[in-house]
Structure formats: C-alpha cells, structure tokens
Length: 471
Image (tube, rainbow, N blue to C red; front, top):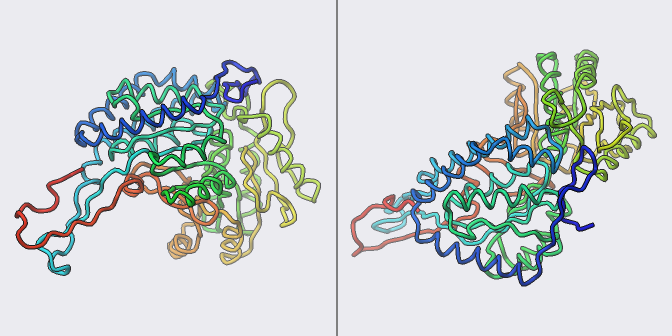
C-alpha cells in the first residue's frame, strides 16, 4: 500500500492513494516556489492582502466540502472540521488586515546612534519549508501560511502522509485566490525527503509542528545548514484546580479541553492537577462528564468524539492506559476500546498515578485524562512543571494573588486562567523546554521568517522619515 493515502479512520478503508514525488519532481517544485518568491518581491502588501482575503472568501464558500475531506482523512468530527475552516478564514483576514502595521518600519533613536535616520525594516527571506501534522490539517498550516505569504515569503508544504487531499486543497485555494503559481506548493513526499529539501540553498528556513523526535531531526539538519527553524513539538499540559475555583465550570471545561479533536491536540489539557479540598467533587463531575460523551460516526452532528486518526495511535493510547492499570492506577471511566470497525477510543479518566507509570510523564494523544491529587499550591506547581514539556497550561482559581503566581510560575509558553487553552491569531503561540522554540501567530509569528534589518542613515541623506516603507 502506498504510504501517502487517505484512509478513513472511522472504517479503516483506504479511499485514495498517491505516488510520492520523484527527486526530479521535488526539485522542480522547489524551483517553482523559489521563482514565485522573486515574483512576490515585486508585489505590495496591499496586493497580497487582496489575494489573502480572496483565499478567506474561498474557505468560507467551500467550508462544508473542505470539512468533509478533513473528517474523512483524519476523523475529527464534522462540526469541529467546519469550525476549523472558519478559523482559518478568520486568520487569513487577520493577517491581510494587520500585515501593513506588522511590517511597517520601526523608527529607532537616531540621535543615540549618531544618525540622521535609523530604523528597523522587516523583509521576507525566501522559501520556507513547513512540515505539518495531521491533527489540525488546515489550521496548523494556515497559521504558518497566512503570515508567511503576507510577509512576502513563499511556502513549501510537506504535510502528514495521511492528509494529502487537505494539503493539495490548500495549495489550490491560494492559487485560485490569485497568488503566483508556486507561492504555496504542496509536495507529496515521505519524511525522508525533508533532509533533501532543507539542504537545498533555495530553501531558507523551516517550521515544524509534530513530535519531539521529528523536531530534533529537523533542528539537526537546519543546524548543519545554518537555517532558521520554528518548532512546536506538543505538550502534556497541566490543568490545575484550586479550592477557590468554580468546580462545576472547571469540570465542564476540562471535558472539552481533554476531548477536543478526539483528544488529539497538542494544547489539550492532559494532566488534571486538583487540590485535595475539591478533588473528590471535581473527580466525580469530571468522570461523569467524560462518560456522557457520545463516541461514534464523526459525520453525525450528535457525535462528541470520533475515531483516533490511526490504528497505531489508538493502540499506543491503550498501551499507556494498560501500563497505568498494571502498575496500580484506577480507571474512573472508559479504558477499553470498543469492538467493531474504526479506531475509536472512549473518553477515559485514570487516577492514582505514580512516577513509574508512562502516563506520569508521557503525552497521551487521545481522549484520556490523568488525575493527580495535590495538597498545596507549591505541590501543584511542582507536578505541573514536572515534565519535559512546556506548551500550554490552565489554572482555575478565583484568588487574584494565586492568579498572578500561576501566570509567573507555570513553566509554559501559554498560561490560561479560568479558561481553556486556545490559539488566537492575535496572541503568540509556542512552547518552552521540549515543546520547542519560536512563536507562531501575532506579529511575532510573521516576523519569525523576516530579515529584521537595521538601517542607519548618516548626513547627506534625503529627509524622508522611516515608516514610509511598509514592506
């Protein structure tokens, strides 16, 4: 069976297969993307904004069909897929609107540096390789593509091999929106081709969302080639509940936070760290909420949790649960995959965890929650930070002093207090420790792949001020 294929995770049926590109075809794709970059250099930010808004319009107009493809390829519920398409259109419009300000020249103190003028100019760097995962097959790509294209870069997408139709669809959207041929190019290749791509001098940088081993691999290649990378490598996010929290609301949000995208989200809450004063009440409500979720056909609007994206992924989740049980953990709900076709796994809550269990330190990429009891704020922080990851985090407390402490003490790229971790175009997104480095989204995400150029002008220059150039 070809490696690049659409396989419906609700049935296990292979629906469509693709031949991987040859080395010659791949080199041709890189050449087209590089030529498109030189074309974009002669465009204005306003022209690119027109194309980006047109792409947003296409996403909105074709939302239902795009969502259907995503659900068929990786199993997220159709309702969630529709919301993902809408979010991508929103992000496209955000960058179309904000790019002129994000890319505008920034004046510096000319007198301090003995210049008549001094400023910072943000300019594109060229072809950027994006190695993307299957779990949010449109959003993960758009949060790179929108700022990169608006900055004047071009994108070369190596998507996960189980979502080829989504990858090709997005290339088609940008082409029909008006971007030059090759400005955003999908390459259907295996992961082994990444070294070849990133070693090409026409490719100037790379961004990856994926596993820790994949991040280490691409960082090693990029280090050898002296190329910039942005890495988002997942997390095992804490969800801390303190005595002053609204326990009912926390348990409700915890259910969504753990099972969003069928539990396959880097920023899904995974470790639920609950103060002993409210532990029993939270555990009872949380387990009841999880058990009440409906698992089934992802195209059914009444389904809460669809299948996991692959049989291997489902088997790995179950192996982590069994390891915990075999070592003394208690399952409050779920814990056994259902019989029948498809790669389904029930919402599961596991407690009485200890450091000898895999779930104590590993990321569980499915609808399985680990429940931890703590007796103080200090112990909560110790458990929350006691992992190699540091992507998202949640804290539930109505105590203002505790809120301030959590904002500082949680060792993560994102801290959400009394709410669920979410990515927004307006806010920077990324992690620390083994969750990676660099930032996506906001102005920072656009500037990650820009040449931040210092411009110093001495006597005898024209009097035009910095800021007139917005590219």
